[in-house]
Length: 139
Image (tube, rainbow, N blue to C red; front, top):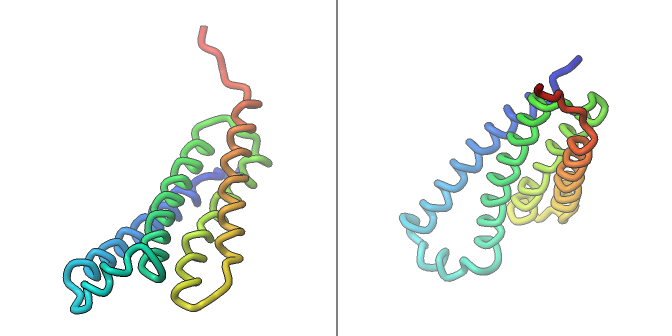
């Protein structure tokens, strides 16, 4: 049987690393960039707001995937459910990438919607699977 969850953990850790570096770039723009006054002035709208939104969601969704992966590896989730919980969790990371694709390349919001729906499905599916799971009892 495949250990569903490991990919979520590994991908989540790489995502956290990437979005941490991205956060450092945002700090650079705020504190050291030659046009930092303009950058700060536009912090509540437009590209800067979208950049911060992608950073926050990237780290949060990465952490959620690490949690999903760990729970799938450690708890008795049925293999069929584990497979799809893992896949929908990973697909959820399309949301922060979609936010970045919107402001960097002008792409439409579809990746954001796919990612948002996927991560929500993953979390609810995991909750239902764990509610139905048979845990060993200690006597």
